[in-house]
Picture 1 (tube, rainbow, N blue to C red):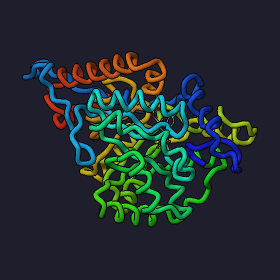
Picture 2 (picture 1 turned 180 degrees about the horizontal axis):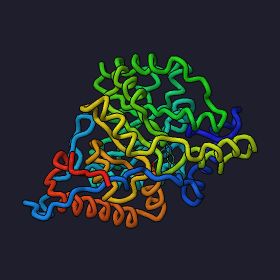
Picture 3 (picture 1 turned 135 degrees about the vertical axis):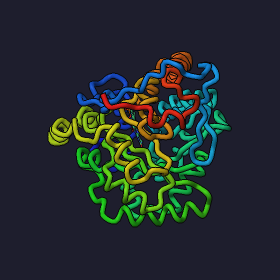
Length: 351
Ligand SMILES: Cc1cc2nc3c(=O)[nH]c(=O)nc-3n(C[C@H](O)[C@H](O)[C@H](O)COP(=O)(O)O)c2cc1C
């Protein structure tokens, strides 16, 4: 079930109304982890004599073979019905204006019901943005492969594909509970899509990656990972708030704090994969968080719920938020003496 639903499995399991509940809860409910990302355990090292002009700091980075104007990503959230399409259109227009990459939410609904594909049409609004398609790892176990992945990529004319990994979310929902054989299927998918020139990135959704998981993903041949960790939106908590089932609610509450904090998740990936393209996500809320995530080893930092909340307020609120985050990032780089993103690496000290 994953991001598609929180209802008991059945014919109505992809009811857009149930999908809307995720959105409502994320817009207004107490869905945050109590524990932090762990980034507060680090400081960027102040450089009293930066040989830099703040306005000339270079924020550009590359991802999935494309150049981004800044290392900030709109994380995958939604799509598949009229309301989520509207939100995605606001988000993708901002991605286009600011030169940022963006992911769409799980496209399972539209692969299973092609009449919904129109609710993922975003390319016209963002001809130049780097877009990531999205399918669930659990679907690979159920037999999806290159054909479905290609449909997801073609549907949004994506530059790359995310395969989301979310065993804890599925366990809380009582959703897709068999993850056996996933690594083998992911490896096959990476190979198939590499032949088409489509990079496959694997992503946790907020529970983080261990060193072991990172090693396995590397062996699968993924083109990159998003190590989304704990400290921001807790998807166990989201599911607890969305479900009508007593047992599921209890599970979601018990596991509300489950997950590897984002800072640790970044370090875990970097220990085993020093050069693998790495997106960090989960609880990043300011430009300083972004700077610390990059300094710890991420290539790009992503946010989900902060962008959702601003998009719901409209394009101006979203623009103001992006401008502020980039201003904070530039300030952090300036005072660390980092003229570009690569120079940020290693400017962190443990607190
Ligand atoms: C409303 C909403 C829907 C989401 N749906 C998806 C999804 O379909 N696929 C996915 O990979 N991640 C999904 N996510 C997870 C986010 O991409 C992100 O990993 C997570 O929310 C942690 O980031 P945050 O703390 O900045 O919110 C969703 C997040 C939100 C807020």
